[in-house]
Image 1 (cartoon, rainbow, N blue to C red):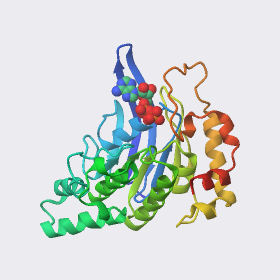
Image 2: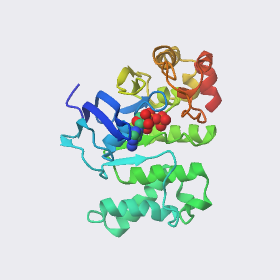
Image 3: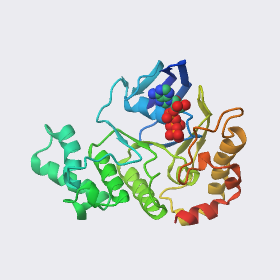
Image 4: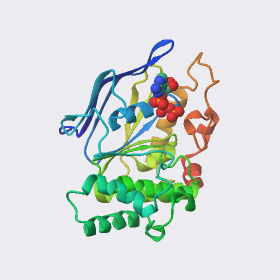
Length: 298
Ligand SMILES: Nc1ncnc2c1ncn2[C@@H]1O[C@H](COP(=O)(O)OP(=O)(O)OP(=O)(O)O)[C@@H](O)[C@H]1O
């Protein structure tokens, strides 16, 4: 591989707790090339958000670190936009103003007012939200707000798009629609994406590579799977694709055979189930075929 665009090296993350240091991550090494779409998958609490937060600059690793295009990541920056599960729009600003705020932060000195306006509209069009420019977050659906959050992130022209379960709170149809939009946008812009998901189908459909994490504490990368399905990808056509089914089974096998949940001897008291959260489901879900699952969200 040519020089990596983004590199996590020998990352350890220990949190201070009342019972002493808690080592969430240990020896995490990950190299990502420009334009690659990487999904992080693993059981609840294994450390996926911690990895993402280190790349976002929101957390500092206790050992090792993250380098983006040759520069060490120490703080958050506009070249690394984050999309969270719940959109986090400013409730008092309109759809247009929410995106404008981000665009002004990044492009105030380099774009004229007219250029900025055109750019904001362009990004809202990408996610089909240009019809609701004057609406406030409280006046639009959760799926629409999430689309605005994605437009806001894209409008910053980030070098890396970091997504923490961006579609987790959405209904199946909206989720499928947004997955398709994201695939198209990512291909057009050649953005680097790191996405956390609990959904095996989502990971296989969207990714160039699925990075599977072991259970914590001291979680690390257990396996990586390159997804070499041709693009553009069509969810319905893929349902019958033997490679699709094989990839899906490889991820399920990692989650349910190699990294059972909860880890042996671990308490389940604090584990709360989530909608469409395959990584906290019981193993019997694994017997569904790839086709069933793809068609269910088509
Ligand atoms: N600030 C903190 N202080 C102490 N422990 C923490 C802190 N943040 C995270 N942890 C612990 O680190 C581990 C990894 O948490 P993290 O949120 O990264 O997991 P995750 O894989 O993203 O989980 P989920 O899929 O449920 O969102 C967990 O055991 C969590 O309790």
